[in-house]
Structures are given as C-alpha cells and as structure tokens.
Length: 158
Image 1 (spheres, rainbow, N blue to C red):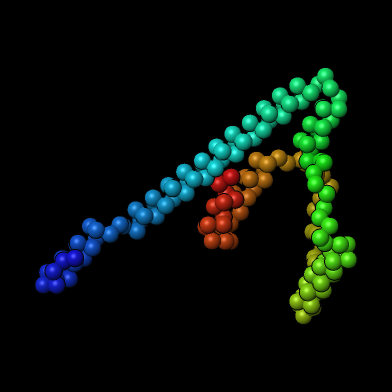
Image 2: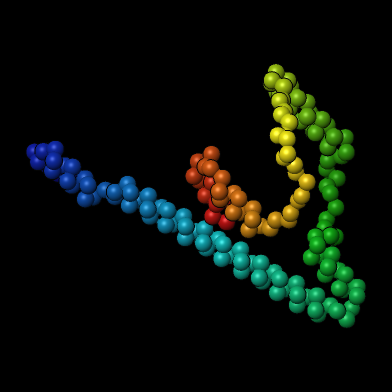
C-alpha cells in the first residue's frame, strides 16, 4: 500500500501494477476454459477409441464360442443388467407420474390457449434427410446466445 500522503494518483498507479487487469484475467479464464474443453474432448476421444478396441478384441476372441460371443454382445448393448429395484412398486411409480401430470396441468390451466397458423401456400415438408452429430453441432453453434456463456459454452465447444 502506498503511504496516505502519496496522493490519489500514486495509489492508482500502485493499484494498477499490483492488481491484475480485468481483461488479462478474462483472457486467462478463457484460455483455461478452452484448454479444459480441449482436454475433455481428447479424453472422450481416447475413451471411445479404447472402448472400440476393447470390444473389437473381445468379439474377435469370442468368435469360436457362440455362448461367450452372445454374452459379450449382450454386455456391449447393455442387456443383462440388474433388474429394476423392488423398492418401488408399480402403484408408487404410477402415482408419481399422475401427480406430476396433475401439477403441470394445474400450473398451466390459466395460460392462454396455444395459437397455430397454417403454412403459406406452396410450402411443404415432404422430404426428410438424415443428419449426423456434426450437423447438429453446427446447427447449435449457429443459434443465438440466449443463456449465460457458461451454459452455451458447454454446447458450443463440443
């Protein structure tokens, strides 16, 4: 701290040299965030690659034994897992969703009715085309930001 007798400008000069500049902090945070996303992406790629290699080796090794092969395929597809818990019965499960639907209906009962408009003449939606993950990611990246950057960044950096 600058001595009280140094004056306002001396205090400002010392403060500007000892405290980080906001833009520098923001840039460092952005760099750290980008590095984290990049590391997460690399980890996911590694995990996918290792999983594919493992299951390929496992399937190849089980080719001679049909029972073992089907067991591996079932594991790969997520079949054969533990059955649902007996702690919740069908009635409790049904009651949960009945109450949920009731709450939604009561909270939206005062809303104005939905409005729909017809398509313009000549406009049709007759053809569908397939999309892949990259198409969806590109579409999401082109959307305008409507959430705080912390939420949008997760989607946009995938």
